[in-house]
Image (tube, rainbow, N blue to C red; front, side, top):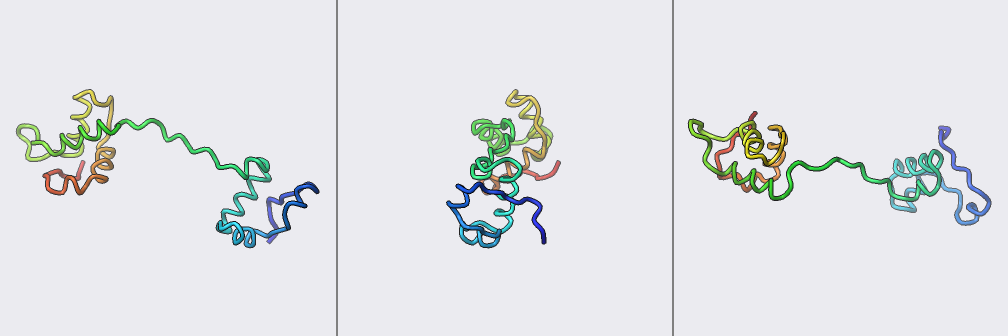
Length: 131
């Protein structure tokens, strides 16, 4: 199959290395063939320097809950539920975080993800994993 991205080296660059196909380059470097193809594509489209350097990580944005806020969420989840309620639900926990001014907004799904990571801590409590 004909390659869509062909790397063209200068004579000086050719002296530094031999001609390698993706499979051989991957075996020599310890990458997969797919990674070698992606590096070749970046070399052609963005230049040699960009292909050899790591890509900058995507900024996933600031997390709403820091360690202290997560601890507060866990302590609320492990506490007695509101009066007239048998147990905490994910939505009630999210609403409680907002009413205590820990966060401006927070979803029940985010609460679920935090609690899921700490499931063993909550194994003996009465928290319902539903919205």
